[in-house]
Length: 249
Image (cartoon, rainbow, N blue to C red; front, top):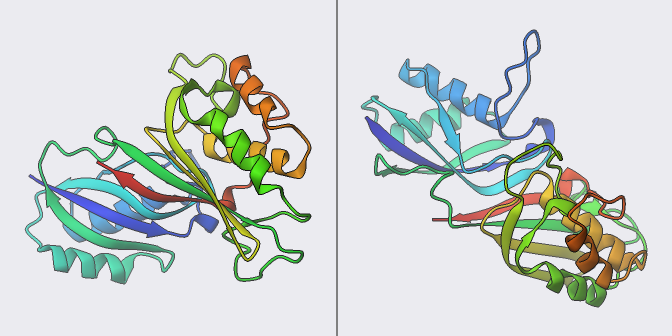
């Protein structure tokens, strides 16, 4: 049995996220489902693709990592060619690599990096409409940076997640760094951490945008963390501005 690691790039605009969804009587288009169908057709096997994590509906990825196991003897260049021929244009497998049978794209993750992009120009850049959240009115980047400092380290991020209250899963995560840059009124918030909860990066981004607008003070982010309960002040930013940038193992 071969274990093959994939690096995948995708535009999530028209997909219901990464994870395959089994809903009777409906056809749900996801990245995982598209790739599995192509690989299964190529190998004649029931291929299951393991992803490094879930991404929400409409979220993009630059270097998403996944792996699958197969008994197929096709060489990697052949598999690559087949994938490029039969996958939709908005999904691209950019590299393939034979890895140890024990490699697991989700369980072996050390850190993930996400980038949230904000278009702060007066008028939305038409070439970024699918990949950035347009916010009118000048944003205070320094206040945003000040607020972000409260989020770095190991915390219970329940206040900044879509995890239901009844869930027994831990909501403690570690954020290693948050870098906020701006060029030509395009703001990028880069998050690196050991893992992220459901909707966490979008909610953190939406909250930092509220700080930058002057709607809440930076210290409020620290207070929200301590509350460990979702507040209306922790606003979820649109999915289209979010991209999974990189995964480290």
